[in-house]
Image (spheres, rainbow, N blue to C red):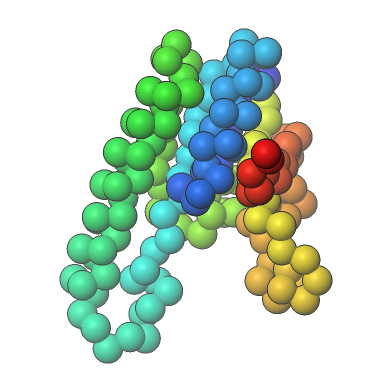
Length: 151
């Protein structure tokens, strides 16, 4: 475990920038480097039963990864101008990828956003953040971004 590394999981949702800004603030306070991570879902695995050719899904996945890599560069330029961040795009189930990269990189902390599901919806859908919190060997900061504007 390296307390000078923070893993920040992002999903390129409408609150992703808030999560990146939070990670930048934590890194600045602690002197840590940040690994921004996006786990791209595998469409081929999700839709293995579909009657569409795998090449169709492969092209979509490649485009998704290219967009994610470009988005990662933009986030790093905006929130980590000091160069103390790297971006990773991996493919697979988000919770598994987050935990795997945390172990590989020997991070000291993981930052994840929460989506705020409650009740039956949370029970049925589960949550990437919940799974990471339950299974992580290092501290996890879960951030519930503000989705409302304050006047």
